[in-house]
Image (cartoon, rainbow, N blue to C red; front, side, top):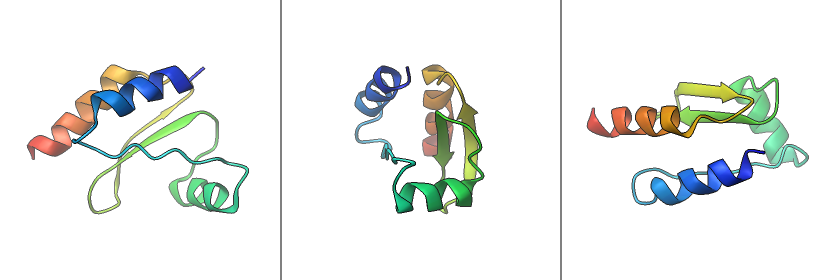
Length: 76
């Protein structure tokens, strides 16, 4: 289950990055998933300030890799 992992990321990244959750059953969620090429659930997408995908994880979310991607974006 991804929720506890994403909850932890949301807490860890507070003030550094926004964590946005989308429900795939809504029009916005469905449209956004199509835009980013989401094909499976759960999927976590890391997007830079210009809207470019810099990381994507499908299936079990690996929090450490997400933190590293965000820290790399912040340091640039």
